Image (cartoon, rainbow, N blue to C red; front, side, top):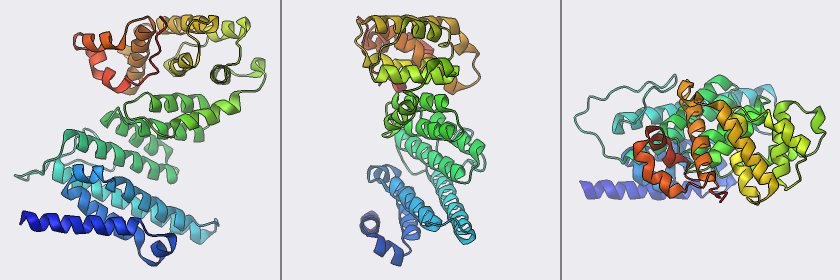
Length: 357
């Protein structure tokens, strides 16, 4: 009966809450991760919207991460490496199993997922009901976590593929962008990392740690001789100077003017404008350089293969219009006439919207 099912669900929720609240000693004595994964999986498949509100998805992931960290231990001997690999494989199996179960139960909006997940159409006559938002959130969240596991395995191409898939599923999910930033930093591309971290903050569900990740990179670029820096390092150095309200010399701005010709270099300056007095000469100069750089890009948005790069271009164009004294309200009112804006605008209304007027 329905009442019995509700009682059973309440019992499992209580069980999960008790297990998650255990201290380290209790976790070690109990097969903690296995129990959490089992209960959280059942609860998510039963009612994904309710379980999302109770954070069962993050409790499941935290348990899997705990298991992996425990296997790593403090040493890097052969046994530890084997145990870590086994824990990652087990976590991967758990997440893929959950994805298949949820897809079968709710018909997730999976599109064309990366390997090895294959969404198969269900022939069930009845489908459990879940909100479109809930299905999107859980698919995007689990995709980010699968990407994390590939990153732990040092399979960076697969990791990037899953992070990008997570963003395509839910462009408002800043966590996917943040993880791409971490991956870029690990690959030795700090400018790409900063670009991704900024994208992680310019969403309706921003990453909670992207801002501190940005500062970590900018702090490392604050000092040094600009003349000895390559172009990417110079752009990062400029962002660091702006963030800490250091002056920019005319020669500095002259060199910068030739560098702001790619979406990845332009985007971080959206945040830089919010740090400045908009009536200052530096702000006016930067705004002019920003708009010149955007003009140089022309209509590249139409030619880009990647939808994610296209969304960056849309973000830049929209923000430029806000800087040009067009209010966000008027953009929202006009979006129905402009398909590109309509597609992206809802995901990027969290810019630092300080008008230059």
